[in-house]
Amino acid sequence: MLRALLAAVDLIWIGSDMKDHGPIEDYRGQDVVEFNGEWFFCDTGESVRGTWMNTPCGHCSRIRTTEGYDRCLGTLDGVRNACCGHGQIEKAYVQFWDKTQLDGNDAILFFKSRGRKTNGEN
Figure (spheres, rainbow, N blue to C red):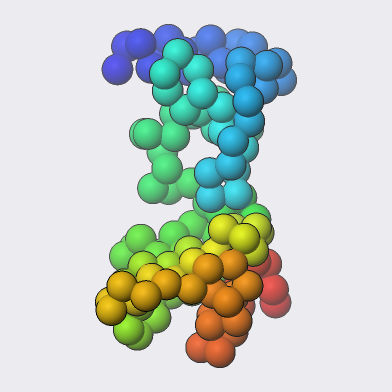
């Protein structure tokens, strides 16, 4: 924990140069960077491990439901797991209880067929 705290302090001190610590990755629509074996959000310098549950979607800025679902999707009957893609259609997916899966645009079309608005739609 102390190591993570020191790394976070270092990242905050570095400020806008934080992205220089490594390649930028995407986590739920947010830019993250790995530093000393731990992932941090580029905009706040906070540890992903400690804050991911309450971090809003980087695309629509909405926080997950209390059940842990993407807020734009809510509860979907017959669905085991799903992700709206957080602004990136190719990352959207739906996993059904029978172990079948829809990915990308097929998942988005499924969400729309269930009346869900994804990827920032109004």
